[in-house]
Image (cartoon, rainbow, N blue to C red; front, side, top):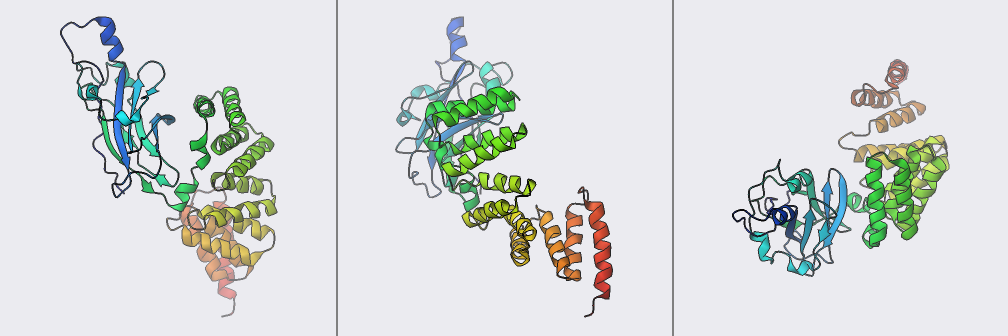
Length: 367
């Protein structure tokens, strides 16, 4: 769905340019800008509760402000130092300074345009989604008004991929989390672990911080620590879907089939329609537990959901299950599909050998 928004353009907040301004004043004014806009539902009504406004620059998300009772917001961005939200978002769109141009600094010469070069804004509310709106500044005569951001009801999968506990996190926990994520992007692993640990210490129900801490620990080959963190994420928010996936995958990697079956089954119960990969883990775990009927049912359901065929291994697993049942014709078809979708898979050569044998067997099975 297209997001109905006005062009994302920007105007610097300051007095109009005058002849020979005082250098200090001009330098200060050119390094700050106010953005304003509003958030509505698709029918134009206001959101049911305050909406978090986030700025995302080069993949780093930062909480800026919340909408007021009418869905309006404004926040200030500075080229140097910390970004500052407006104290009263009820004033969004009503500050006369927002409509004043200042000079004609370009995208390349002004420090503020450089800071905003890869930045976007999005609205965040559990159960809804919005597209991101670019706020890149090309010159200082642009308009600061972002326009209207539409909040769309999320599908089950989209809603579950966002933890409701994030919005309840206190500022000091959120700040530690953001510092941790920034350190991860800079590959400062010790600093990242320290900040994420601080975030969950301040706010023990911070599910996304627990999840990211687990990812960090996994990357450092601390699988025990990763599992502990992901279990805490699940405990903090049982409706947050991401921990189910990593826990099911970890259990499969460790050949803990009962655990993998449980996590994938719980994942499916949470959202049976949006995650075909849950059925892959469930099919493999059930097959390893010699529950072949359940394994086949899971593989078939996963394939039915995977309409874009993004998970080729579902075809492979179903092919093997059908081979066990001596249903060689359909088994061969599944393996051919797998090879078509993943011709360069690491096991492609061995699968081709299997396919040759299955096709030969299919010709000898009595009809």
